[in-house]
Length: 400
Ligand code: HSE
Image (cartoon, rainbow, N blue to C red):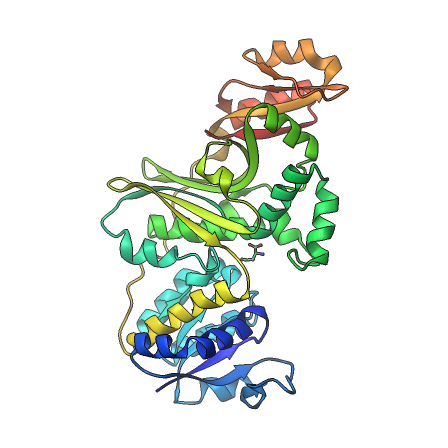
């Protein structure tokens, strides 16, 4: 029997307990030992809950119990999860987490501490919710040189963009509805400003590079400036708008960005709608592969955490290899990256726009008082200089 503890009995933590209960036969067989939830740590009590007798409020009780071999950290946020995780790993207790903030901020250090103490720090659920992506990168694509990862990494923003497009609805209205339905947080900043996707692409990039890409170094834009008028132009161009995390290796340096992109309707990412996520991985032998599924939600995310619990149970006293060093990757300058841009500006600036941007292609979506056009390919710095000279309403990058 392997005894485990769950830190945080919220959406994901209660999902972990539910998955272990509902799939116990399969899970115990695959773990090769029976998994038992001995403790649930939370500030609250849960009277009437079938697991109320396992709820404790003192982390020390868990970490000082020699029977505990695995901890599921489903608290979210950096503190106190960081301290709890370090303490557990130093005692040789493996930790499985869904906490992308913590993995992005301290992943390589926690992996090192786990290694030093012959236990494991696993984080399948930190990116893509229930979609297997960390394990494929660590175990399955090990014969590849991976040079490009791109993904729809945030379900909330994908849900909002999908609704805006389908219902010609405004960003504010869809956000309010998403909050009312519990799809978006009451404080939605981390999702809509792209910070959540930024942490996820930083984690994936670090696994691609086997070094650390600091999330603070990933240029990030969210979707709060996208309007339903942008979708009118997108439709005219045969495109849709998706918030993408992109990352690629070029000559030993890494370029990463989170931003909304106009992508062709024929692009595989264009059919990823609602709360679904998808991750594209390019390897030099395999070529393209794509991983698709529910990027959030109680049971899908919990299923990924429990898959890590099973892996840890099979490897008690043994290390599961994870190639992610603390050394930082060299980053490419975002200002030098080239894109084609879709631009909106006041219709009175039509002639000036043609003069400044030269190779423009006008997109007529019948929007009064303004014009929309795409530019030729140019660097971010060149675009920013020209856009400032012209005075634009907005711009979105194109991706083919
Ligand atoms: N807020 C995140 C999302 C949850 O919307 O994708 C999963 O990380």
